[in-house]
Length: 234
Ligand SMILES: [Ca+2]
Ligand SMILES: [Ca+2]
Image (tube, rainbow, N blue to C red; front, side, top):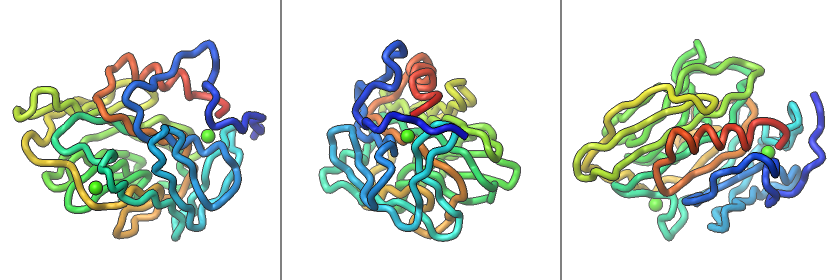
């Protein structure tokens, strides 16, 4: 275990590795290392609160540890709807390192009737995404293992709306799957954005870092770029 010296939320990850900021509407670096308030540094100001989760440095990452019992962070449901995407395109993802693998525990989640989520699907470490809870658009993001950081990403391309769109998932910058998305139903809801749980519980046990949401579908190259820009000491 090593300790990062960087406490600046706003600095570039590493100057030589370009990151992806176009369409970034939520970004929590978890680099602040203190306080029960969690800053969204995207400029959209969807700051959150911590319940139980603690600030830690793991493998050079400043991040939050969730205990799998009751720890979580809550970012609410921004009243301007900028974290709801209706029938539009969006992308979301995070770095996650599980301490234990428990089925039906939630890493990041904004669901209420509909919405989107990344969660652990079974006890073998399979992770999956909901991109329209109402229509059960469920897509695999591969597997994760205890003690190992994985970058989990999901893109929803609705550019052909009202025809059905395309969901793509990525594990460590590599595309895992492609599937057909929800088509005509809206993904907007009044649910809160949570880390470490969904509204009904499902508390995850592990370390979370660098959570992002974009208001557009990222390309394969951009997800790989995010992996390269955020893999390491952050
Ligand atoms: Ca961090
Ligand atoms: Ca909403």
